[in-house]
Length: 278
Image (tube, rainbow, N blue to C red; front, side, top):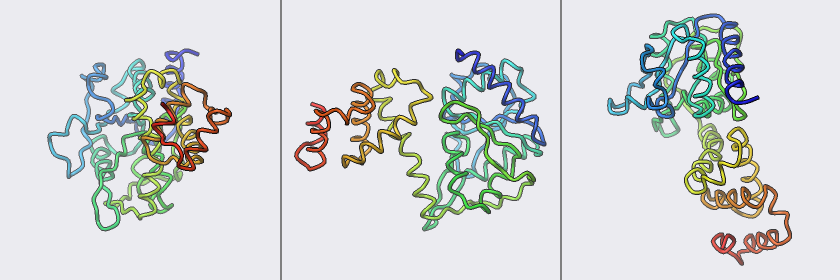
């Protein structure tokens, strides 16, 4: 199935899941990941900016915004799927709140507090981050944080439609801000590491990365991070170099005798990463 047909199929699945949940359908778009230059077909569609109280006006174009699904035609809904596939910047929601009410309550969820009372901007509109938040929160936090909507749908790393598992009964009851423990903070940072490696690969080895389908890249990086750790590589730059070798020499290149010997020398400190790739 080509990407156009797959997007149409996913668009139909989105409509079905959103319509099955109580409330109206909305599209949450991450403005930082989906600038207007990528979305000319949304230019005339009414939207409400989702702005945290602490955001300066200068960042308005990069802020998330909310669109009522009823304002979109079928072709535009399919375009939101394409946008989600290409950027991870789209989430589809169902809520009993109005568009304005939902935008306000989502904005409150963008401000969290780390240990030592350090404020942090939480990227709830980034579909890569959203399931991480869902995973690290306690059950009570999860039920409160996600209570604004009865359905939260997004494309997962394999570009398949996924939906957060929520209680059947949904009623807004979030009380800001969200306080994160040190363990939760570390879990979020750990979960974000593969994306940091992917950004390095996109910058430094874009051509090799392009040879790997986009829906397989995250799993590839996670696999290579685990393999690199066995050889004592933990720094993002070193892991990215290791991934670059795997992209050109094979995903299991470390099993090849010549590479295995070099990596053993690297692990024992007899070789540097620069010497490994020279």
